Length: 429
Image (spheres, rainbow, N blue to C red):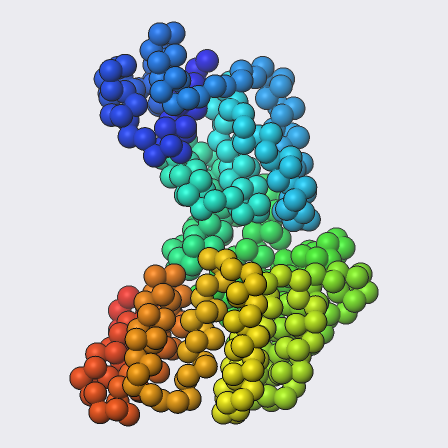
């Protein structure tokens, strides 16, 4: 029973409950703090009142059960990271979500929750649950060993990357990088970390680091015949090469991914690979080839978000060529898809298609559409498009002789550019 305090603390924080709220009418806040930090063992009456207020039941494990239980969870954790079979993982994970285990070994309690943290990330558990779990673990991290602190930084980095807090995310990953030689990690764990780190570097525009660490992960995945993860790495490397104008190398990376996909019949990758091949040719201003690959990508996409991304990519290529009829044709396809499959996740495309439908008209009556679009992308922290549409609105003001509005909007566009690149000071440019 010595670690009941950890379970109480974990449950309280995950329920967004303050110590004073939990303790009220049961015990003093200072006494609750001692319970949560395992400095005292509460009486049975106090314990039951705290558990009732938290609506918390628990299962007591023997040391033998504890060891066996963690071994089983580790195998699920490893399989989930390597194979990413989300539906299978979710079925197995549900049994853990509904139960609370009282570990006799404090370190096992931390390891258990850190494994769950990553499994929740893989199965795309609700953000609020993940943030509360992170907060709870963060308040206990002074008791972590090196491996646990590494796992905490890895998981936190992934979570904040999903939340588009790219600069803070990278800080967590680089904390993990500093720890990686301090203890033993299996090769697959190192490859997994390098893979995640490379994606964080990519989001922070550190392209050489992206290629370096993704290549390290790729070499392990190829040697161990973990082909799906190898394809992931080829794609990440290809994107970094595209963004550094190494187009030939990028195409080679994508075609290697495409070959693996075709040889092993991994059809789920066909759409994303041809999408990125299209992007590579778009960067070279080879519009026809880009659109050819985008249309091939459409024929392979299985999800609405993928379809919308590719339709939007086609719209942008026609916009570069000022082909109004084609822009309107493809925007219409996008609107039809949005209407048939409404979702908060894809709502941004409504603004994209609305803007591109009128972008070439340069009419001041479209001012409010630009404003609402900019506000949307600011709220969703998609500063790339907030910046882009703010520039377009500023140009619109300028061409209609609203110079003060134009200057203010250009200033706002610069702020979005700083946010997009995680720049705090002018000197960082």
